[in-house]
Image (cartoon, rainbow, N blue to C red; front, top):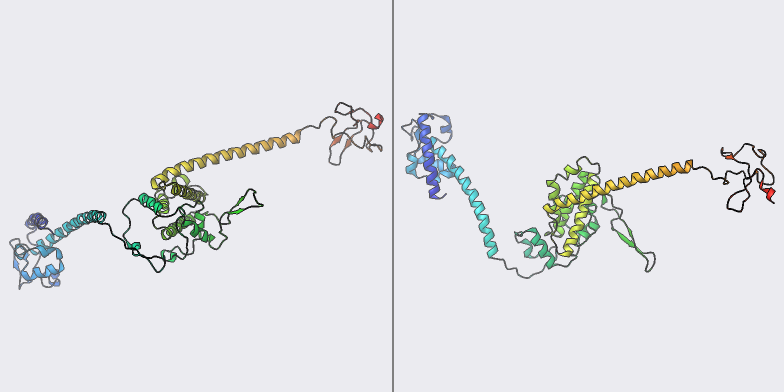
Length: 416
């Protein structure tokens, strides 16, 4: 501890101790068992009594105290001879508290000094080989970048191809508790920051082992229009499933592209917003909506990578969620309104078809009445019905040359 700090602390503590000793003339007894248990400090053979009634610490006692209380090592023997044992203990407490405050300031100052030193003295990296397995280059073990994540993102964009790096899968995901939760399709897409096909459900444990080849293109003939066929992966439907899938995606991205902080930003937004509890707290499809939003963000970040723009950080994600969720609510409202209108129209059409009267001269004319054999129900004016109860009219069904029927009180044979 610096001498000036030690002097200030000592002076302030001694003033407090003098006031305390004046109020309590005798706090310790020469036969105090606590003193005897501490190794005989202040025993009758070595101690002398102070004017306040306490017992002064001897040189032998001070050596013992220094071994137990390192903060007292800066106290000179002559100063200790002027202090009582209880005053020495109070001084130790004050010195310890002061040392902690100085340590905090020293830590902040050390961090700032280290940062400036690292900026001013860049490390020269020797060329070497790296195969991402047993042969690892020493550059992998440098300290983490102190720049912003966006600077790191753009630097990676200039250093590698648009499609990222070659995908592999034998990462030690078990060591971080995420083993067995990533599909082969997930590993393929996570290595490519430009991929619009990275989806959260590819990191859902229920989909491991499923047919996860992703979206396929099927062409029926040369030159024909291709058709998209979706994959068969299960959707994330529960909130816990969503949390686990997102944590697995973050771990996978840490192994595949350690500089890519896009997933960490998504997870940070979810944590800060309590998984959008304000907007989706009572929703039964909360996990499904959050999964759709994550997929939307992944697609946005892929486009930003291709265009050389920043990825969506926590602040941008807050704005993106508000916009995306608002549009989703509007689209859902419009869809519900359209569905209600459609159902109403269907009901009206059904009612109109049911109540629509038969056209005069139409199918309500009895065909048997107009046949050669006649109708068994009788002639003109006879009551005639079909087996289903439809009333038929006994009238002429012959055409009248004007697009209608004769409908006279006779069979059509009379026109021949």
